[in-house]
Image 1 (tube, chains in turn yellow, cyan):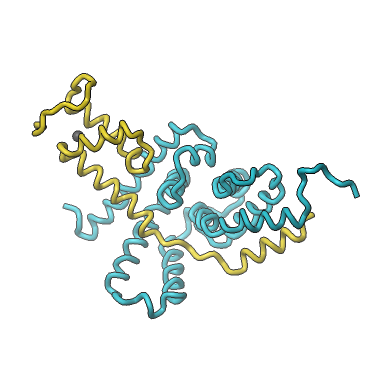
Image 2 (cartoon, rainbow over the protein chains, first blue to last red):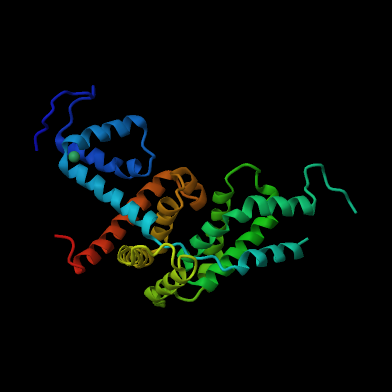
Length: 93
Length: 197
Ligand SMILES: [Zn+2]
């Protein structure tokens, strides 16, 4: 796939498209989890502007994380548990 | 009658701090315990054990540091050291039944009339939630753990490394593999439901 915009922001040597995609896929989890450095984040954002397949994997990964944090039901803590813990603590010297 | 050194807390002070700083973590801690054991009674025992240990070692807890991460670490260690051995084989449990039970209880609870403005949307949401839960529960416990810590509880990689006693690099690779398996399981489901191309 060709990149439409040819301005080169990176002063690093121009890597092959494949190597760039590889790097971006390595950054995917870091980006999703907010752990990427701002430099990596920038590189990532710039790449997915032009690369459909990396853009799509980013969307998919975001969706996956969203499924867990948005749809997984939290279980309800038994009402007695906090009291039970406090009572046990009271007995402890 | 021996008065301890200045730093030592009285029992009243200790109990008060314990309640103020550690008990608020009960909800996420119980949820974590449940996701590890997949059993309510086991989760209950594990959480009690964790709090008792935390109380015993409370002097080692530095005020103002991350109470949640500290408790999660204690719970995780209890689970691995003692609990895993004596617990019934969780692989035999019918998870969908357990999930269903919680869901129906949830509906009965507080959301009775007020939030059921759109029943259709809500039941679709439930369906997705059930599916995510059974896919997650089918993962090996180490994979389940990193996904819960990261995606549900929002711990950073550094906090996860401390909770799990593993290097950050291992956190990353484990999380990556865990997500791949979860994706695989959910895609299988999407296919059977006629979504995916
Ligand atoms: Zn790419």
